[in-house]
Length: 114
Image (cartoon, rainbow, N blue to C red; front, side, top):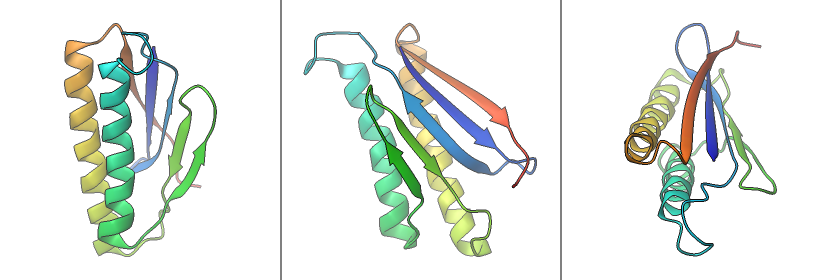
């Protein structure tokens, strides 16, 4: 199962997200859940970089691991754009989860700003 966790600050901003695991919906190369989740997450991160000029802290690893952390010291304008793109990512992932909930799980946690 793909597990995606979004960490929000007390004010509701997304501070980071982590994605890991495998959907196991189909064989490698034919897994539409994995392909969809990957396209949505990498598309959102690439959009943030391209459209805002801000590059988040990105960590990648084995087993589909992706972690992105976002600064809380961005200008108001850049922060608003980053958050909008991340909220769009959530909507897209929730759409996948709605139809393929046995293969992808999204959770939300609140954390205090560091």
